Length: 111
Length: 115
Image (cartoon, rainbow over all chains, first blue to last red; front, side):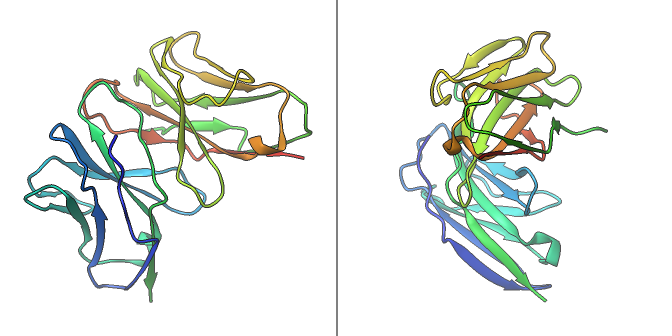
């Protein structure tokens, strides 16, 4: 899997949109962008994934640049419960089932 | 429904002892994964099962680590002759299948401390 680069930490005010960037400049054509998060003392939790189109679900939106070399995870109205470490992962769509985590971004929501 | 469960939640053992960590996946999930997470790091892949067989064990650090899944459901991670460097949180995840883009559901982990 290609490597990703994320800022080590970010703060966001409660109620604001949290925008978490990820660089994946060596991503291949058959690799998807996945986001997981890990709240303290819990296992990672799946958030969203995408290939090249923007995606939205009940948790977040994923914006992928046209060249696919970077993406942004958007939490539209951050709450204190969104404080967690967020991992951006690139993964092929078959034949490589494991997830390769980096060190992620520690997002702190400020009341 | 019930998520992935892991037991024990905490395990303290002495250097050189043998330990077993148990994972109960979500019912019906055929794929099961083990990861290890050291302090301040992201989870690191150890092994994954598709059914009863280990499809990829490339992440096991050495032959002291072994995992089984005899009936295609519960899995046990076994560590022989534990070392202080084995101290970490051991995470288990399961998914509906390994094929395609199936999301992985993680358990809360077992915190192993080797003294």
